[in-house]
Image 1: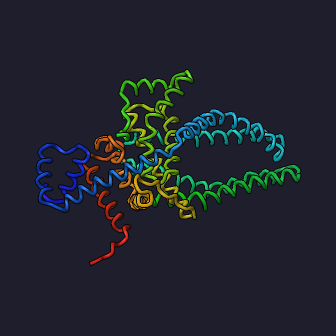
Image 2: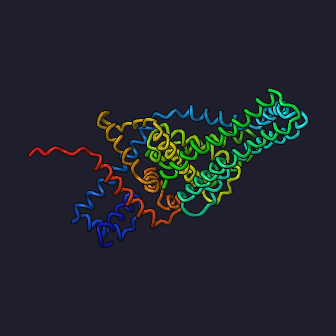
Image 3: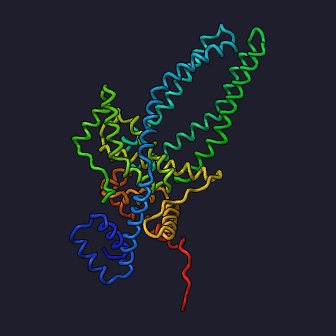
Length: 217
Length: 195
């Protein structure tokens, strides 16, 4: 330790009980003659105390029972998720069959199942990310940025790919034996839904994620 | 001190980890409750410093527990449970903060900070100044300062949580402290010269 910078780092170590005895003696000797380092030590203690007091006071306002109840509610929702997915397929399949003709009900069921599988993938993303946090070596912040980059890529893909899926209902209309108002309305709703999802990805989610990325950079 | 970081004994940690994969729902629920009670306060402190306000910190804390409870059955105990939970809390808190900053750009107002003890008016000002100064730091600096502000965490544990070498922890803490002090100084109104 030769410069004030080194002694300031030693002050940090002493504040957190990580300074060895020999270095502590040298630091004590330096502090008797250096007013700037003494001021740094006082300020560091003050700031740490302020941060702790700030947190301790805020803890008093936290409603732990509410947080506990919210977690319980979340657990129930997770359990209910699978049943909701099944219910969605049961409702969606006949509706899609109505639009595309009941002959294509098998396709509709497959589409419904795909929605459920997609939902499961989304639900499991957080599990995968949490496991990644456990196993990934290196900086947590680098990992966090990587995970965010992955989300950004997904939204970019959604914005590009989803409009192409509008071709499916349009193809359904073109190949239909008869154009009933129900069929046209159903296809229009599907097209609108896909376009809305693509626009949401491009103009809402993507800019938000990019701002988050910038904030973390 | 009231804010000591939780110390789950290794034996109890093993019992809890066995309970979360138990086929008995009551055992799983009891393990979740114990984990929530042991870690809620220190994780909240961390989230509060990283997020800057109580509401966002509460959301981040809740997401942390949701993530932990979801992924706990697959936890392979490569690290201590506490280290893993702190890592998830840092991740959730930084993401929530980034999300909040992003929303604020879209026009949301900021919540004032909880006041410090003492004269409420003066302490609220100090508390707000501290929050503003913390908000100006980079994510790296906020994370290291916040972890050191959670009592009882050693620099070794903080290094493990952030995934950086011990030497880097000290230099990062020092740089963060300097930056924080500079931000607080810049935020302070100029004192009048009465000579």
